[in-house]
Length: 335
Image (cartoon, rainbow, N blue to C red; front, side):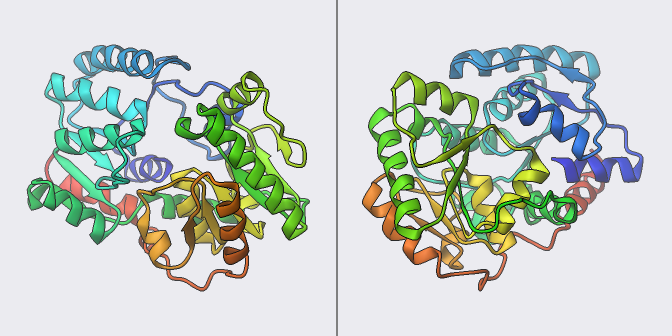
């Protein structure tokens, strides 16, 4: 969302930031406002971590009150998070038009809550900002009127291009970067154990260290399941610019993150996705990414394939001007 915020600032628009506070660790929250030089949020709900129902219900209740008091002419939400669905439902009930940034993404796996979130928000939104033509086609096929769908590219391209020059150079030279945090992976002992085994084997067979900045939720499950991470270099979560640097200079990225798949595609870093499906199929189609699932054998095989590739693909997510297009569309709609 930072490019949207910057565009609103540039144009002097009347807007405010509503932060749910689902993330509260400095490296997953405050550091973004500090590094990206963003205005502080007018509101922070302090939702924190909890079950799906707890996070969504706290968000819905908090956002509803703010929307009633502030009466904004539109609410912009991004992606597929619990913050997105909670805020979207509140706006829908309050009669506030919703603009969904990154609309039309589908993994077609209903076992992940993010899939439910993104589908519901798409169908209650009045303005759907699709990152690609394929995403727009998905929305039209689901019966959403063409007049509500706009292909803008993805603001993640804007953010990467705006911040790559500010990235922190990693001290590492040759390494593989890993991120594993999705609940369908880390909350399932067998899947998490198999992924960790795959990471260890990739490190050994390719002769490169695997650096894994571990999310607090993933660390909790690692300890609860008493899993062995020996042979993997665990570290604390990394700030945004530091993480961009790690992605850019890595020989390979192994991840279950949707955003990482896109960032690697933009940066020219080969990616292996530790899931059985992806809502970013464009990354696979252009050759920047491959699906490996959670099998240790498949992870090793995919890593051997992808480490030979390096940036020989096109970026399918736009020209880095998505925020300008989104804000211009909203202004033309007289919202």
